[in-house]
Length: 400
Image (tube, rainbow, N blue to C red; front, side):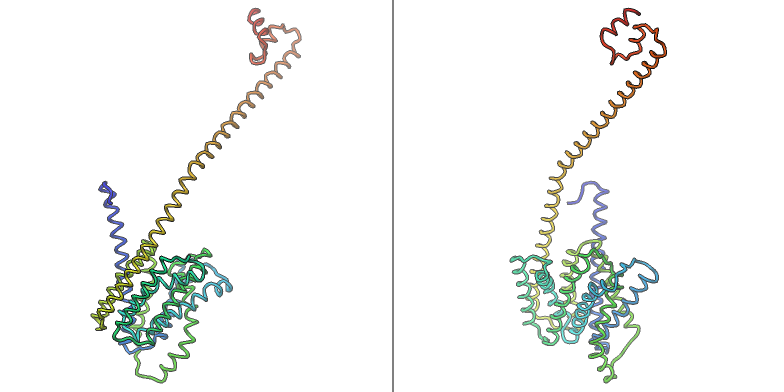
């Protein structure tokens, strides 16, 4: 519900428009990168997915080094060699496997079917989290994941140009990516290392590049040497790497300005748009069974996102209730602290008065010792009323 105040309403609408702008920007760039990669690998005369991925990581490593070490746009975490090997290298290995196998599947499968299989990602992340211990097992979530898996099976059954090699590569890529996301949470986020895209490029890209060298030297490089009919266009490759880099920044902006949940929901819309663009641009056939299966997948993903949203709301409500319970206790403690301070200040005040009285008594005694002929009336007059007896005060008043 919008606020009644015109200024507040305009501010809310401005924030909504800004959030939707980030969503549209991310969706546009993501679709462009996917379609660009498909065109480069399948239609531009460069059918080498490992070489393309290796080029991406080389470009990202260079950009990350310039941003962190040369221009110092962002700070370095100054990881030791041991920390880098223990925390970053496993993520680089999983990332290399994910990118290699995912790009390889574009040689065999249509973009639309690849996007349909990506609906398995929430279930794979959930399963890997349960195995490692970052997620708790839930029957409802498991049934939801089975619904998504059933939808992917229906999509595969209805795919006209299904190639088992491409399907195995795509499923393996999803497994690698799910493990990577889980290990990022375990090895990076749980250790308090929050990385923005430039820091991620600086640390992860070189590790990914190292692991990609092995399949490149054993698979792509021999083929590139024997076959000479492939085409390498430097301007196309630079543009392709640049769009991949911009996509990393767009993901960071989207999550930072909205939330990961918004990104997941927008991803469902993006996948439907990719199915349309794949059909329109690359003439990839889409059957009714494909759409029916993907409908199952989308319903499962939406239900999963709803469950996650409810869990987040419950957690926030529980935290708020705990804060409300602590508030009276903190208030009472603050009251007790103020009462103690008041008592201490009162004690100090009384001690100060007592010291002043003692000083006046001492001065009176000194006067008496210096003037022994002083009359009792003078002695009583020098004594403060608080220390003089009632009789002394009365005799003093009579003499006066």
